[in-house]
Length: 207
Image 1 (cartoon, rainbow, N blue to C red):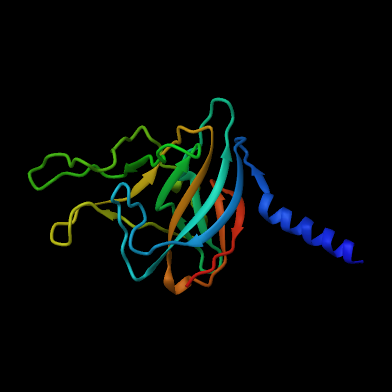
Image 2 (tube, rainbow, N blue to C red):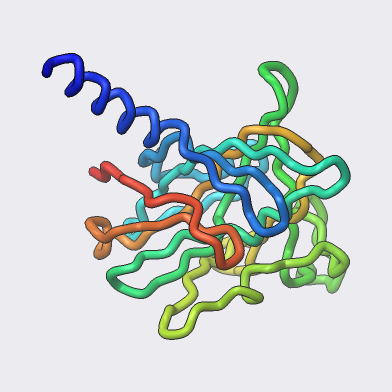
């Protein structure tokens, strides 16, 4: 009897840790973990900061395996609050192809930004219409999209744009996906989606 119970627990535990989804376009995506992260900054290396007492920053860690030639477009990920019908845009991303080396970011601006003199803003993510933003291609009926513009100016002279994340250069890699979740809905149920395909229910322990 004890052995039977142990085998059942082992089986259930393994299915949680090692469950894997193969998407319709043949990417293999495996959920690893999710947790709350520092509320002061999402993407420190690129200095894109989202500071708000109304938001909780969360990280969802997954592993991705790609086909030989195709590469995954990160803007196709979203986090759904299924209780309050909210669909969150990916707010930040870091990718790791190995233990060593610099992480991948691949951020892009939705809006071309200019300084007060009319010159294109420098030292910001690239504006490239050729890099597809797929977030709105998979809108869900009755769900409200939630996305936070990044201010590349200051409070006195704001310079705002939505930032999205394009196509990875990696074939097989670990991805850290970051979302800003509304504090008022922190106890809701969340599900990670790629395009319109369910990847995993997300168990978040939020402070």
